[in-house]
Amino acid sequence: MIPVTKPYLPDRKKFEKYIDGIYQRHWLTNKGRLVQDLTQRLEEYLGVENLLLVANGTLALQIAYRVLGISGAHPMGSSEAITTPFTFIATASSLKWDGVEPVFVDIDPDTWCLDPANIVSAITPKTKAIIPVHVFGNACDVEAIDSLAREYNLKVIYDGSHAFDTKYKGESLLRHGDAATLSFHATKLFHTGEGGAIVFKHKEDLERAKKMINFGITGPERIEDLGINAKMSELQAAMGLCVLDEMEENLAARSGVWLRYKKHLASRVQLQRQSPHLSYNYSYFPALFETEDQAQSIAARLEADSVLVRRYFYPSLESVNCLGEHSPQAISSDVAKRILCLPIFDQLGKEEQMSIINIINMELNS
Ligand SMILES: *Cc1c(COP(=O)(O)O)cnc(C)c1O
Image (cartoon, rainbow, N blue to C red; front, side, top):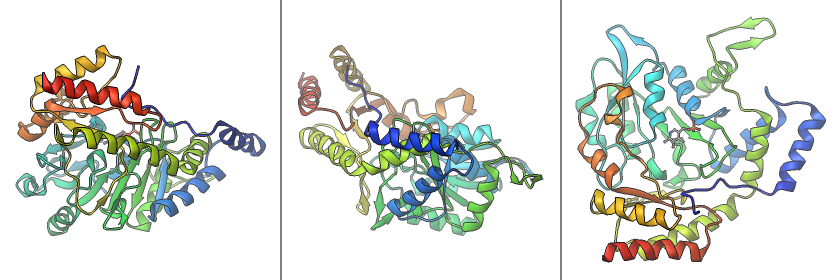
């Protein structure tokens, strides 16, 4: 069976060395050495400041909402945040979970990121923030979004779960927004098993978040603020340190896979239009087919050959009941129906990949 993705497993001997250290120090969590090391190394690697490691990417979003004052009630009812319907459920469900109404605006038909032209008409007196997603690692139109946010006095939190190691105009894409979040779930490009991070623009926000992820506790007998448990453990950090050491090999293998798909499929299917200022991380290979039927028959044909492709992201989130009633989002729901993400991971062999490409081409010809 060829899965759509396979978690990256780093050198086991090295991982065991880190585990030995954990045993020697007898220190498993709470400001451990490995979490501190990983924080510093990620800031250097990504070229960002004010990075905070947390337990997962969903808590990263929720802590960012709290710190930036987005969660909670507005005098006129629930607060609102403008976001994209074309993303993983956590972007919107985390808002709803925290009492903030997600307000969906449609995506650009080519970049599949939230289209800034749709933002202004969705702003109400209750709007507190914009939560765009750098979907599949593509860069949102950060200049347009950041300038609208300034004009209307809104916070911006980019869900950068797919944007590890992407650069925009030569700098980390994660430097945009009041905060940008990352997911280090096992299936993501860089991972810690479960894990995540927040990159804050301002140091004061980082300092507040540090307290918040440890129950608001600031001393042995001192609780300063309302908090939650969102700490990363030493075991997670150990995995992250090992995966980070091997990023170069991982990226080289994935870019090979990505470029081979592109070479053989670019003239047959629609690919995501990437920002011209982006340097890409080869995290996903989404392909948009002409019709839902075509996408579905290709998925079925691949599955019969033990290849699992996924409809990322389906369904478009305005149609998910637990998120409440929302107006139709024509472009997102159309893209969601016709898209398939093809298998991409470091160990995907050339022959396996060519068999996937051949099946797709055969179906497209039939
Ligand atoms: C993976 C993902 C998340 C959630 O991250 P977890 O670490 O699984 O909690 C949020 N948003 C997007 C876009 C994701 O892909």
